[in-house]
Image (tube, rainbow, N blue to C red; front, side, top):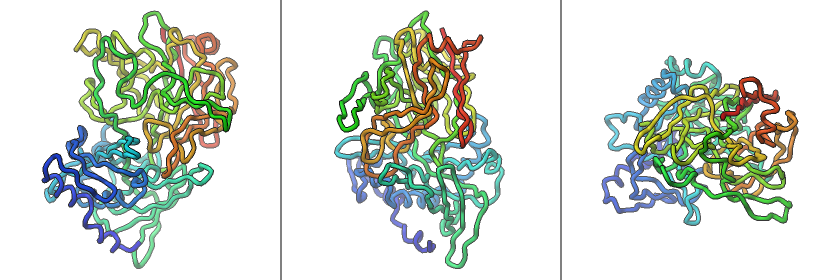
Amino acid sequence: MESNKFQTKKMGFLIVFTLLIACEQNSIAPLGNEELISEISFIDSQPIIELRDRGTLDSELFEEFKDDLIESYGADLVSEVKAKLGEKKSFDGLVLIKDIPLKKKAKSPISTHFKVIEDEELIDEFVLAVRPYKNNDNMAAKMANSSDDIWIALDPDKFYLEDDEYGNEIWPITIEGNHITDPDRVIELTFDESGLISSVEKSMLKSKAITDPSIILVETIPVEPCEIQLKTTSSPEDGCHPSGGGGGGGYNPSDVRIDDWSRGESTGTWGTGHVNFVLKGVQLAVTGDGGSPSDLQFFSKKSDDMLRNMPVSYKYRFDAVARLNPYTSSVVNTIIEGADKGVPFNVHYQVPDINYAGQYYSFEGISRFLTPLPGLIDEHTVDYFPLFNLTRTSGPWRFNLVDDDKDYADMSTRRKNTRIMDVHTFHMDTGTWVELETGFTTRNHRWGSSDDPLLDSGVRRITIENVRAHIDGNSELLISRITSNGEFKFKFGLEE
């Protein structure tokens, strides 16, 4: 694409923000299909941008944001990402844009917090961040030490990808990126569901193929704008979750299935002498995201009736979100409640951020927080996360993992409220894998792509008796399945 296209975008976010932030706090200024609202973000301390149409996510709005990002930060952005890659605790190199030092010439910070409103309902909320694209296992070392050209592009899964009329993602997809210090230099990037397959630098005079380019992707981090309360007498459910309630749902006569428009049944609460079914490790064979890490969520159902679809809302997430909490100083974290939630200790776990296929994520040494006394926080390490309290709520339980794309709170697909897929499912009673027709309750939307159930992640008929029949002498159970893309693996256990 000709370079003069990018010269025309001089009225982007940066100029608009500079003018609007100087206005009165109670003003609301329209930006076409967007509004800069007076509410100040707890993440970047700037006015929040409200999008009144989900289709805006597929417009040129964020292309303009990308141009302003280069203008305001440029090489400083690369320096921050490289610094993160040098920290062992931050292997993925995730950097919130609000944490990048501004160039001196920039007049004001850029607002990075967005709310998507449709029919007066909040359907999505996110903050923008950058992360290096991982195209091989040497990604961290390569970019951290690189003096080569570095390019910036929008995450193809979040901003471009769409489904066809049958609900299948349309791959391959070709997008444009820009050189981090010279936006007139344009690179054409083509991805399939497994990642980058070709890259070509374009100019008006020639095109040059580039092998293994260093790419920084702009991505969305979901927001849960609340603080974990140090509860001593209140609800056993995590109040920060956007959904709630128990099981149940509506009858769908078109396919004789029962949808569940809730977060699903309670997986248990705190209790002494209880047996918890716990997760100790995960390895994904595939994520479903060609351009970015997985946004991994766990959907569960207390029913072995496969005509009862999975709930619309996730039960747990193994993914970073932006939320305030009293346990760590970071704004973005992975702290969640498990099956031992509730009074008197208000237990939370800092679980792994499970991102990439082919990498084993161990829960060994994760932090467990509890409050033995009001205002007192006890942090210690464990090697598990409790999925189900099988004493408090015996099951049988089943679950599936899903890679989320846009609607973080709920499972979503284009145009349909029920999605039915064949999922390879481990049967805890027999110890065998069976391909099983599985239904998912979904919110429908008009733009973008559907969330991706991981088709090797099903586990069914989880009860104390069934698990005990298969665990080893350490009360652990390792199950795996070899797929065409690699090995899928779970490590479970029982904790009493």
